[in-house]
Picture 1 (cartoon, rainbow, N blue to C red):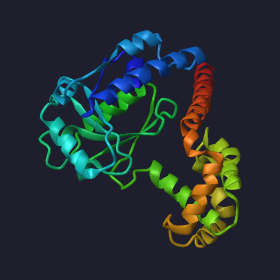
Picture 2 (cartoon, rainbow, N blue to C red):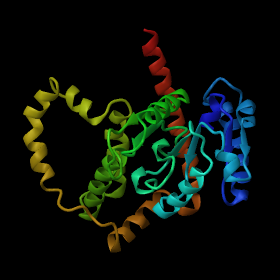
Picture 3 (cartoon, one colour):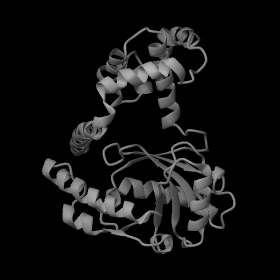
Picture 4 (tube, rainbow, N blue to C red):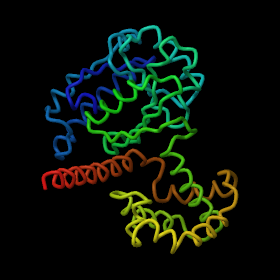
Length: 299
């Protein structure tokens, strides 16, 4: 949907052919809903965008001649090795093979490829239509021009690309997210706050700030600059951080209790409805941010 929103012809392939049929049916519904809500991205109509997306019957048909291939298989290194080995047979000399992996560095599954210099990670954030960040992570052997092309393409389709200068397990987004998840789990595990209050601390606290500025600029603005902030609070931050302890392993009785509590908020049988609720709010926030950014550019 993102690539089609700016006029690119998009082919979809899956080893289970019926899943592409299901995806196309779902895309048609989503595009119509986005149009009705006024959240449709791009200048093309929902019908024009849908007509740019088509089913491919073979991997060769999907990859051959494509300028960009976005791999979206499960987070399994061995599976990714197989998929990239297969794509390696069909990619053109100018095509980019991009992985959506959220944790695995490209070097862990592309070292034996003929076209390994054309491989890069382009990790989107779920759901990518509403959350525009894309982490671009080159392998040691990725041609720098591939990074540049991928960044330019992601920006062209309305995403917000960031580039990691070297590989790191989990990249940047998930490492930051995991630190937050770990501490939230510890607070819950130790009986310090209820699940509801932990969630509220993010939704109605940190999350509101971070929708527009990151944690480091937050520090900068909460004092007379970053140096002043660290002079005031740096020692306290360090002392509190020393109390965090080892990272928790999420298992056992605590996990069972957490699962029961979170299912009260978001029952498993209503997860589809809850995801739609989430997406509608993310879409509204994304639209508001775009409007504000366009207004700032015009000033």
